[in-house]
Image (cartoon, rainbow over all chains, first blue to last red; front, side):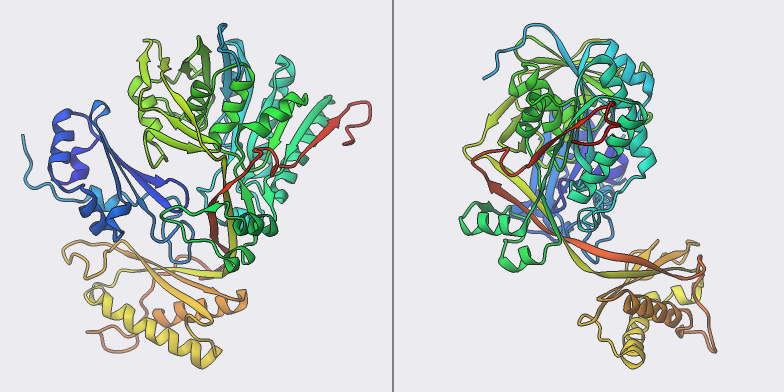
Length: 105
Length: 466
C-alpha cells in the first residue's frame, strides 16, 4: 500500500519557477487521518525526500476539505539546464510511492 | 474607495489561456447571463523561460486569433470591454506587438471602430539596476540574491502589473486592453473593481476565474467561467456551459492549485486572504463565495521576471532493450559518458563544463539495476548545451554514436545498443534560456512602470493606427 493508493489525487505543479507545490487530496477522513498520522509528510521528511532545507518546506493540513498541501523550493528551477520537468508535474511521484505499510480494511 | 455594489454585476473569463479555445456558445451564454466585461489570461511562466528569453509565441497565430476574434466581436456586440493580460505568454514587447497586430487584423477584417489600449510590461536593465541600487528589490527565500551580473546577463525582463494599469486604460475609454505581463487575477480584479466591486471579492473571484473552467468538478475542455457579484462581499461562480458544474469542493480545491499557500495569495499591492472565506453550493452547479479579503501591502511591490541565454541545445533520443546490457546499466552509462567526454576532447577540442554540458537522462528506470523480472525499455535522452549550435550538434552526434556501440559487460564482440526512433537522430533545440530574475520591486506608482499607448482603429481610415 502506497500513499498514492490511499489518496484521491496527488498532484504537483510550479508555484512560480522557483517553488513547487504538491496537493494531496483524499476521499475520506480515515484516509486523510492515516496520511497525516503516518509521519511521512513532516517538513523534515519532505526535506530529506526532496533534498531541500527543512526550514523552507511549508506544510498545510486542511481537514475540512480532506487535503494536505506541501510547498517547497524547486531544485533546479524550472527550465534550468538539467531540469527534467518544466511544469513540475511529476514532482509528486516520490510522495505517491511512499510505503504506507500493509493494506488496512 | 469604491462604494459596495448593490445590483448584481457579472464578469466572464473566456478561457484559461488565450489560444486554448472555448465554445462560442458558452461566451454567448455568459453574456446572456449578464456579463459586463470579458477577460482572458494569455500567459504564464509555466511553460518555462524560453518564451520570455526568445520573444517567441507558445501558441499559433491562428489559435490566438480565433479566441481574440470571438471575444472582440462579442464585446463589441454587447458594448462591453475586453481585457487580455500577459499577452502573449511572457509579456515581452515582441510578443505584445504580435497580439496587437492580431487585434488590428480582426478590426480591419470586421470593419470595427476600436479603441485599443496597449500596456507594456517589458522593462530595461537600467530600470532594475536603479531600483536595486536604491534598495527597492527584495529576494524571496528560494530565489538567488540579485547582483549586477545577473541583471546585465538578462536577455529580457518584464514585471507583472496589478489591476491599476488595466483600470486606467478602461477609464481612458479603451474597448480592448492588450496588456503585457500581468498578475493573472489582476485582469479580472480590475474589471470587477471598475464595476464597483470591493477589492476582497474582486481579487478572490479573479483568482478563481483566471484558469477558465478549471474549477469545474470535471473540466471537459477549456471553456468560459462567470463570476456574479452581489451585495458588498459575495460572488457566485458559474460555468455557463451546462455540461460542466462546480461544487464547493471543486472551487475550494482549485484555490490550492499552483498557489504555494492556500490562504494567503500574494499579488501586486497586497494579499488575497481566503482564510475566512465561506463557500456555499447553490445546488445548480453554482457556488457562492463570501468573506474573502484583500489586505493592501505597506509597500506596493511588483514581481519582475527575467530570462537569460544559457546556450544552444541538441538532443538525441534512444531506447535500450538488451537484457544483458541492462544488468549493468549504471556501469555502461558511466563508462560511456567518460568515453564521450574523451572523444569530444580529442575530435572537437572542446571540454565538458567549460565548453558544453552533457546530460544523459534516463526514462523507465531509477538509478541502479532495473527489476530483472520485468520486461521493459529504458528511455534515454542525450542532451548537449554548448555555446554554439554547431558544437552542441557535434557533441550530441558523438554522444549518440558512442553509446550506440559502447561495449557491454558480458557480451563479446561488436555491439549496437540503441533503438533510435528518429532519423536524423540529433535534433537542434535552438537557443536555451534560464530564468535569471524573479524578484519583487517596490514602486510608488503602480502604473508608472507600465507604459500605455492608446490606438484608435477606425473603419473610415482603413483601420490605420493613429
